[in-house]
Amino acid sequence: MEEILINILNNMEKRIIFADNKAIIRYLNKAAKEHLLKKGLRDLEGKSLLEFHKDETNKKILSALEDLKMNNNLEKVMINTTTIYAVRDEDKNLIGIYEMY
Image: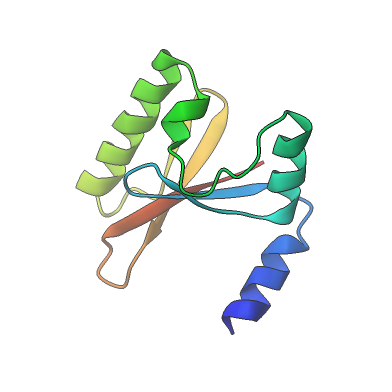
C-alpha cells in the first residue's frame, strides 16, 4: 500500500513537501523535487525547513508548529500566502506538516 501511495503522490502535478513536527523535511514528491532542483536545491530530505527561509518566515513556521501541536482541532494555518496542513496520528497528535502548491 505504501508504494501505491508514493506513486499517487509522485504523479500529482502539485508540489508536496512533508516535514516532521520538528520541521525536518521527510518527503518531497517528484514535482517538488523537480521544481526545487531548478532553483539549485537538491537532497533536501533530512534538512530543516528553517535552512531555506528568512528569519521572519522561520518564526512563523515555528509558531505554526507550536499552534498545531497545542491545538488538536487545528488542521491548517496560513504562513504568508501558503497554507500549512497538519498531519496527525490516530490520537490527534501532530506528527508533521505538509505544504501543497
